[in-house]
Image 1 (cartoon, rainbow, N blue to C red):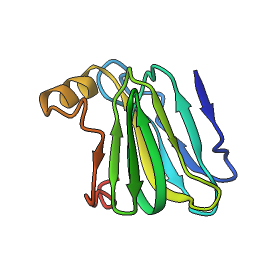
Image 2 (cartoon, rainbow, N blue to C red):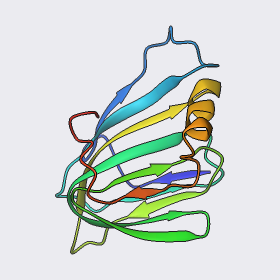
Image 3 (cartoon, rainbow, N blue to C red):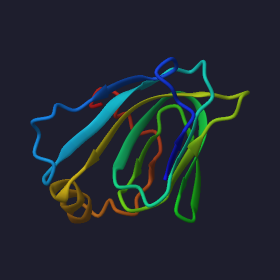
Length: 130
C-alpha cells in the first residue's frame, strides 16, 4: 500500500523510460520536492528502494521499527521490502531530491556494500550525485 500526499503540483517527478530491463536495475522515478509544501509518504512492504537528499528543512523517517530525524545535508536510504514512512510537519517542511529504484542488481549492490540497514547518512552531501 502506498499513500502519498505529494502531488504533481508540489513535486517535480520524472518516470523511467519503458525500454529499461526491469529485472536488473531500474530507476522507477526521480524528482525534487520543494520546501513550501508539507510531505507525507507511506509505503508498506515497499517494492522499491528510495534514496533521498535533504536540501533544506527537517523531517522524520521511519523504516520498519527505526525512527530518525533528518536535517538539511542528510541523505537517507530506504531499502526495498521494508516499510517506509517519511514526513514533515506543517511548520517545518523539507526540500528533497530523490530517486526510487528496484531490481535484482539494486538489491545485490545494497547487500554487497552492507547498506540494507544503514538508513541515514548524516551530513553526507549527495546533492550533486542525485
